[in-house]
Length: 380
Image (cartoon, rainbow, N blue to C red; front, side, top):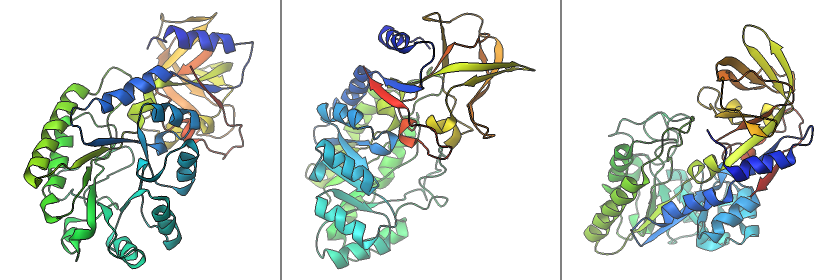
């Protein structure tokens, strides 16, 4: 991976003998990703960034300027979104096992809510009789579901959403104004997306006052940066599909999408310094950061393989990537490992290590487990 000139210059300007680890974001790339979704030809649509991917207030301000709203699942994120200036239907709240108090809070905020189970729907009806509500659906019984990074989001292995049987048993379907679906994470197969969407659409005719179909997110980012999601095909296919749905219903159905990691993942970088090197059967490289400051490899140890770049003497190294290297953190925690057995140049103390694809589920997932300072985040 080649560092863009402005990112490399920023890192070099920060490099004064030894610095604390930090994140830096390419704001333009975040904006470009927002515009990809805004450019979907289907007119009746809303795009809501999934804040669990990144809750940095500056990040949210950037996407708000691009007219992208937010989707969230916690009251803390609700508070932060409101402080940024998001209100009412700008916010979609989809979660599970809500308490009465939280449900009342979401209702009073004016946010659009999708409930997760028959009991949650009963609680809503008790609290707010005859008021419309959305439901999260699990349509995995007729599709072979993909296993995603966090397990299954649809199908019998998933705890999330109404099953088809539970959907059929809803007494008053006229209060359901929206159907929500989330098929998985880091998916590139557009045919799989469309097949899942069609399964959700197959039950849309059962709801006479349906206003929206929320297809969630899950758009793929490859770990090595070599594969790109085909937005041209996706945007064409989703427009065709929604146009057919609206035609069959006799009125325009709103399309809602909740992209998460795809918006900022490739725009972010985590930067730290090499402070120790142990030459054994492979090179063991210690840095002045801990995995709790860059937690995605800890949360997803089997799949989180972030591209690594080395800077020495203010220049990115491109040659001699043939040394088997493990990069470890500055604690004694046995799982304080950023990457294992990857090919890098022969590293020296004082080199700068840059991890790519760090803009989502990294700084937003910061842990206090080992007591390290939360890294600063910069936007350029």
